[in-house]
Length: 108
Figure 1 (tube, rainbow, N blue to C red):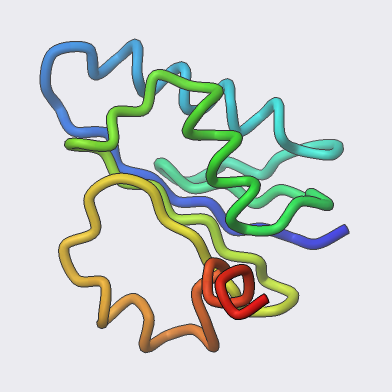
Figure 2 (tube, rainbow, N blue to C red):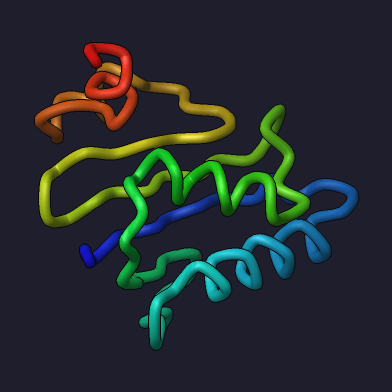
């Protein structure tokens, strides 16, 4: 069981409120126990899933729009991360972590 950091941005356009609420609900469903969410669009949860599996579950389980919204999931235990949606500066993001969660999957 690892602690995961989840941050997201929902583009303020038509459907914003519905997408935001469904993303929050999807994150809460993924938490094994309680979730800490005292700051805006940021959660700490515990989950046995990988960062990539957790990002996929949140994406598939919500109305998240990958053409305009942004999701970041970080496994705090092993410094892997996964993203969904629009990432404007992927190299900058990658510089803060050991590896993207997909790197391990692609390497075998």
